[in-house]
Length: 307
Image 1 (cartoon, one colour):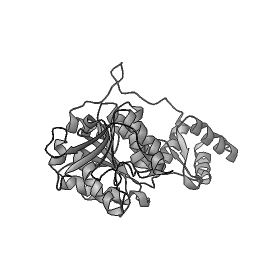
Image 2: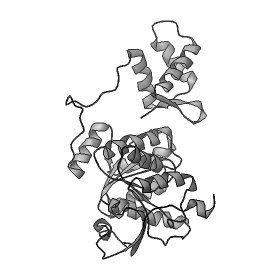
Image 3: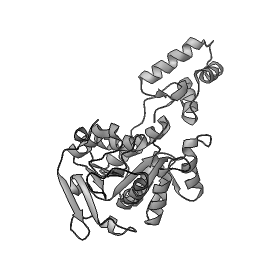
Image 4: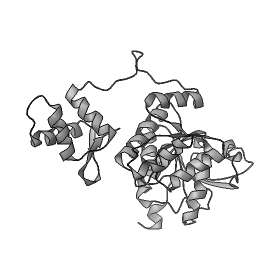
């Protein structure tokens, strides 16, 4: 993909410190950028929720990014992230699907997008009323140190940063550091202690970050940060998932705790079932649940739930 193809179409702005369009939240951080180069709607640069996570994300990480970005966006909260593959891209996509503007802070210039595979996503962000933003001039190529510097802008524009998956060390972990330095809240979704991709996230919780352990705890934080109550159905109760059999629930609960190989899942199913359970039934059950959107295939063939 050449540079001409990578160029993002949309209104372009250069906003300097002191101008009315410059986000007040960024004035309050250490080392505010003197200029912001923006493609899209300047008004999209409002305080919202930053959602960041691993680039080499597991389905658990991308599922959490989608889950919580959707819940925040459905309440009209802008989603802020870094446009990276994995969790960042999942959060931006969830905001777009919810019809809410999302802001992408890039490491390099807006005409030197990275990763290039997200070119289509970035075009959609601009077309939907969001914005691509950088403190670098239009064509400056992204260099490694620029991404760490970029993280202070993600954390600075947001009222809080939600970490959905992070290893040690990682750029995601550095975004949490920047949020703390800017006196912003850090929220963290815990992960398996056996997962390398969750070591940074779990360490943040150990160090005092706010754990997001379920939808209710997330709703509580949205209320504390934005004054927004939980979203309810027309009948006045939160929407519940369709009922499943007791057998299904046992297997799905186990897969929610940790992805399993087909062999391990079969062993669990065989001990749970009240009738003789053949391996072919395990494969059929997994295929049925996958078709229903309840489970997904992890790398290496393991099976886990869709969040």
